Image 1 (cartoon, rainbow, N blue to C red):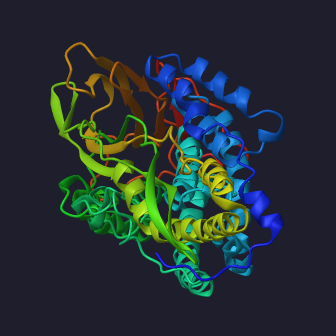
Image 2: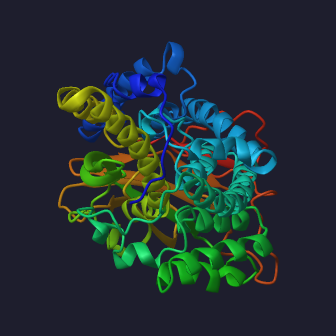
Image 3: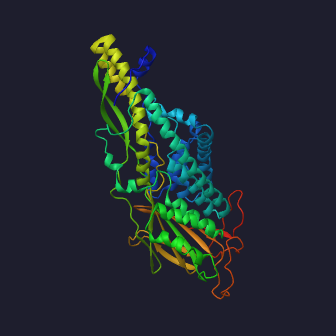
Length: 502
């Protein structure tokens, strides 16, 4: 690391040596809620997060993401949408600035004396993408395919905004570093576990924000709305992001048959979305770096975020539906995505830390020079105190891994085992032309979401050359043992029902 000479006023020096007030980390705010959710006490988990989204935190982006996700697990889909809409308002503001006033966002590139945790949280890029996908999934559970379609379209537009802004930000960060005389890059981070970011699974990802779940789901929704021309690009993109997975490849390969008169009769097209665990936490790691000053080298402790791979990540290879064993595909791994996002972000984190260290180092050097060794020792202690832990803010209640399975199943009641562990069986009732089964798995708890059903089963006796009924003009699915939910605001009738599960 090299730094240029900074003119440090007494005011800056005083600020540097003031110390900092320790603020709660995000992990400390949500850890208890995540823990009780894993034991099956989802309403208690929701109440704990709701208690934190009061007063000044009412519109907090990250806390509303956490609340919305926990409410989704608890099958409170409209309440989840309400919370996610609060977060989405914040992300929309970011999008507008990214498009019309990127310099306003880039103003945060510069270092702050109090560290990255004091910066406004704009959300990880993959969190921005998952936000609209989560909204779409809630709409699906509420029987509102048309508005889910709108959310999916917004997801694709959001990805494009992110891609353009990040390319501009990279250039701006390099210029900022150059103007401060700071060398960029992380090659000087001795002691940083770079192997966590250079993992082959991390390097295989195209970027840190696109995931195959969002694109496969878009293909499924467009297909259910009888728009195969739009469904195909979704399936194709999912395969590009997660290649060589037969379950995903079949989504594209079988599209023509599923949307033509050749479609199988008397069966339901069932999509299982099986989510497991929670996304990883960022941990803070202090690294001691040498800082050159006019009076020689001084050392300074700087905090950097680290995400470690999960050696015990959940793996679901098959799910048992009645007497059938359905293969699954690991479609999204948020531990890997979070590390890819951190890999892309680390040069900027390093630059801000270097600038922060430069300001503090020069201030400390001036105190050593003007006030002697004793004051210098006090300055050393105070400078260390102003370096807070690394920013740990992440959407922690997201799943760690997402698997999908898909099959044509005759209508009826089925016993389903998602974990492969004996005795962990759930019951589902299959019906409709299309059906989505959402599941959230923890080590000792399975949350089965409401079953979303669209259209009616094509009768076996139907004339073979008659086109299949679409989701738009289908009659409502059979409602045996089903409770129809109230459509989301602005919903249109697609002949859908959402079945409450126990």
